[in-house]
Figure (cartoon, rainbow, N blue to C red):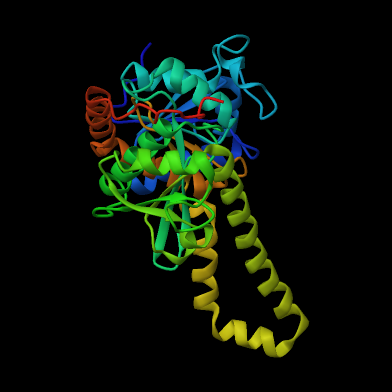
Length: 351
């Protein structure tokens, strides 16, 4: 029987290192506190056992059976071959068939985007999806894409990443006329080698507020709103940022234990310390949108806690309520129509 919760977000109940405990906890919280309906997808017995204290499910929460479980070690194509009724596949099907407005998972990233591509489909004119992550900056946050969905990129892929990132920042994050930069080893237009120069030329045709090359430090200084790069570079940036954030918090904690003076100082500045933790905590952002598919899909950190799940579902609902997918579809179609996706002559981008 088809689910019957209008406007629901499909949540992968068994995706992530701490599932299903944190996913169930997050689902209950988002239903009760924010009134966002959730389809909790996973093996029925496993999920029902986690919900054992409820004889009757809370209003706004519905279970959808998906007997197969994809592990973090599984190859991405397992969702199309051996585990066709996995929670990831079923979540994507629910979105593709219109039973859910968005999907959220903290599970296997590669398998999630394979399932989304197969069951939801790519937007016409988008060849490769992009995973977009929000990183903290001195002036708020910076959207970085791709951070792992497309490891090697041609200039026309980055052109679309710039377009999708700009639309998402505007329609979902509320950033008016977002500044878009291309990651490079220098701000000058000629820096970065032949491939980056080709990418720079392509981004001029994206129809966005392209400000040129930016360096890694600019992501955190707040001088750019959207940064585009290939998935390999973006993933390294993301993991370094996570590591530095955890380092800052841990060093502060360690120093306070070494000295009563430092401890007293931290106590006096506990508000500032709390704000620092919030700004570098990935759970505040919930998940990274997989841009380029026909329906909203958010992929969270494998270590997601209940707070991250709540924020991911809230972000997915906001993404679904916006017209971001429609805008991307219209603008991508326009790029193809005017031939702006062609690589420069003599390009070695396919190498």
